[in-house]
Length: 116
Image (cartoon, rainbow, N blue to C red; front, side, top):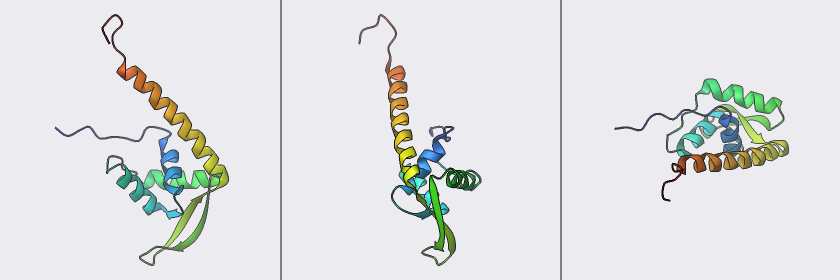
């Protein structure tokens, strides 16, 4: 039996993109590939979601971008995290760590009155 498909939880795409770009500038397709490789292909990011997110993050001042060329000599926009973006990434990382820890407590909870 194959495990159910994982969908991106609302609000996580920005976090994943910022983390991918924290390693250095990348173009959109490289960001998608990094997320897929890092999650062992458990998460798939659609281009229809990625590029609006990149533009939104650029508007918020979390990313800067410059045109350049890929390894295949194709023109592409390369994104990089700004200082404001790094600050947001750190805050979101902390928030998600707290959230997953608390959800873990709920999932590990036993019925009241049962032995631990």
